[in-house]
Image 1 (cartoon, helix red, strand yellow):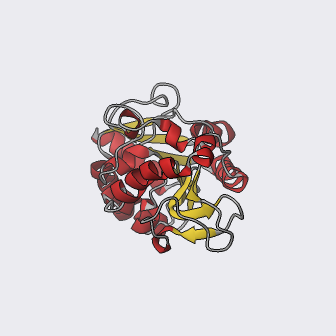
Image 2 (image 1 turned 90 degrees about the vertical axis):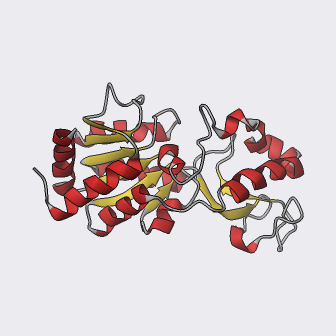
Length: 251
């Protein structure tokens, strides 16, 4: 494993345009369950509550579940050492941005400045009628559904529901960054969710990027795309790897 750490650290130290692509696995260590798999949210809740058509038809029913998942489960979550390590790597100029499928705002709370959020952020709400954006912290969820103060339209978390398209500006910027990337860190993502799952392939195809994967288990990327697979918890691996990169203490 140490040889793999050394190789990964060397690639990161010499990266000209390093990127991170993160998924639900990085936030599990902050106490947020994944949506899929054993113990995931979808093993407890029906995904229909995040379908746009259902939400628009039954906003009160959807909001009862949304409140429980996003504003109770997520409420006490804090960045873990994996998040803070990535923020350190960005500050040092090793990585240029984090592209994430997560909606929990933990990368930003850890200090990362450049974050492309493929699926939005629960820290904001948007009016489905007029499009006005609110900070979730300013919206009371005592009476559901919450409504817009400007037009009385229904508010929804500013995340991508089933049936919605990924925002064009985010998608274009993320894929443009992937085309320039020469080293990409995959952290806690399994490569199952499209179109974000194509980002590492884009990096490999356009710039023959080195793909460094950090996951507790093998993913869809491991056998066919990953160059270096560091198996384990991101909260344990990333601080050690970051220390090696920043200090140059590589064997």
